[in-house]
Image (cartoon, rainbow, N blue to C red; front, side):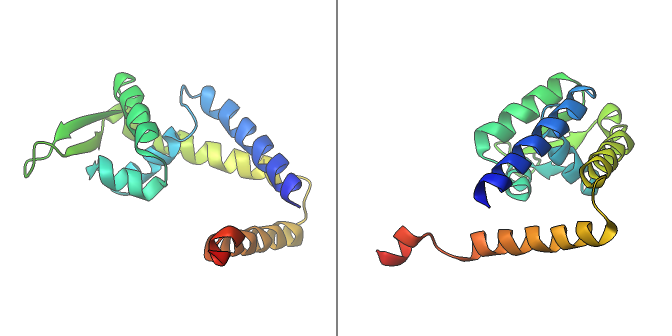
Length: 143
């Protein structure tokens, strides 16, 4: 089962990356944009927490996205050390293309599944994720 999950994740990630490349985005950048679509003006720390990526990955992505004109980072009024991230008009214009990308990815992923199989897969995937995140690893349990 673990190898099947690995293969699935790898294939899904590769297909998503190809779709993102066509939009001049790198994997993970769409997640940051989606967080900003929901609430523009977040701090880098808030974005880091919401997407669950490491600090260097988020910082590099934000720098690339700023260079591409999708967002701006400005010091917060309350603390100049804190950076607040705002979408530009170009960044806001990515909302619909990203939604369409996710719809395409989902349709492609489920095209060989019945509706019942797709629902069962989602339930199973969440159950596996819950099992993996709610239990300590065996080495930690014995220590």
